Image (cartoon, rainbow, N blue to C red):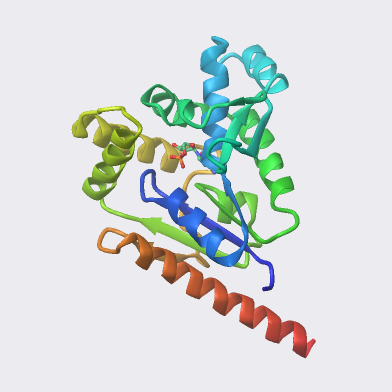
Length: 234
Ligand code: DC
């Protein structure tokens, strides 16, 4: 199958990551979770008592930050590693969620992570999800999706997700964390979350998981087919 770049952006907790992962699997593409990279950077700053508002700390933090995605030999799943350690669980904790949007407003941190994301997607055949993938990381992506869902649906899904990991968090606390992250992500100066004019909007509030995956896979197949026909005619 032809290789394209699929950019999936949207608000926090819309199910972007799980959807993107399933889309990648269906197409035989590589999935890259850019949010996990901001989360890993946040964990690194927290663990080393580095402040994102002190330039010297930012420089030090970036110099010692190495993020990679590797297959965990136990779960056989692709997971996030920070300086060689598996941090897949830690980066999803509330401790990190509460700090990640602030870290993601820092220009130098974004610059470094965007460069890494662009390197990871150079060979195409990737599905990447985040907030600025269609606007900044891959403005030339062949397919751009903008996912939305209402706040109640998102909070309930996130609560379930945390519960499955053994973290019981109050629904209101999750709602206010999501609303606050939406506010910061959409209003920040550096690469704010915005729907690109060429992105297809999918509201997942009333869709099942399989339906949202199918919609994107179908769109991707159409784009791949069009690319093939175009290449054949030129
Ligand atoms: O997708 P997520 O909820 O795991 O992302 C965590 C945070 O990282 C989110 O609040 C905003 C930030 N982020 C970003 O600014 N740009 C991206 N491409 C991905 C995530």
